Image (cartoon, rainbow, N blue to C red; front, side, top):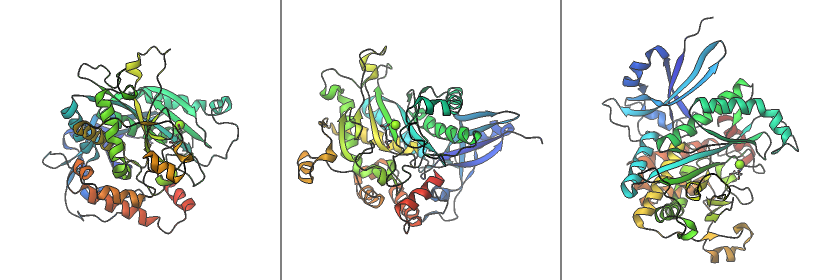
Length: 436
Ligand code: GLU
Ligand code: MG
């Protein structure tokens, strides 16, 4: 039968889901101007599809305008390409809708440039698992694992490259059917656009192989987590690296140190954004190489912010390699919101002129409660409920977002939490695994 190419104009929403409406590709020119019709209440569609408490009800009209720079295209033999185009949600008069996740990130990036003249350089590192794979002991990082999944990996890497995402590594991670994919850094909005597109490419390529991929933060209380690590550095107006200073504390430049300090100062109050599901908090526990404590680590893979290693034998100069990663995020969160929170926290740290925190040199999870208290470090929030409470009551963090956003977000997340409230953690993970 004949087929005609469709393009999905879409947004990565508060639930971290990509949702939109499709139109025939022949209409693209018109849709780039007019967009497609959208409804304010869509923002309260939770990851389980039930609508949380909404201030908008059945009222209001918006347009979702696809952006050509944020396209995902995956060819299919004998059929039209699969095409997704991320977009901006606007009022019908063209002004940005304040709760559009892309608009929220755009504001954050503009603030960073205002306070520092610096541009964000970065990349999302993703982990995911193939569902319904029987555990295969002995395959983590192995040649056998590589061989078994080589066709999948090679297809994914080719699709990334064709979509303007420079592949860096693809590996068979530690957990059953678990993979990690890294990419080269991009700048500003493209960092988040590429993260969203990569997730969709992984779902789409897995489906072509007859598999289901899941980015669920964790598949069970005893499982290994699927983390999202956000690698960050700063570049100046000339395009030169601005993260490294050989004489700075932990070799961080003044602005990079303040940026990191801002993240850690406000992290507890914005964890609800970066680790936004009920089961995210099963992952943010010790001994999982995720992030359990609010701390800066020097090379420590359990710190919420880690200064990443540099190599003396690399072809890249030390200053260009120098960067840090944020580890307390997962893929239940929209990359736009994760990045917006991090950039606002960093810009806030620069504005406040914060000093660089000490990096922890020991495993905090091995300390007694007294020694932990004496070290000045605390666990990150331990439930979504606690994280939402800290988010809702921090006026500085609330001020980073458009008026009404905190209330909207908390209602959304409370609605989501209510849908898994009666379930035990194993069942909760299973429910989340189905939707991410
Ligand atoms: N799976 C770990 C996480 O949940 C990360 C492991 C790694 O360091 O790549 O964040
Ligand atoms: Mg990993």
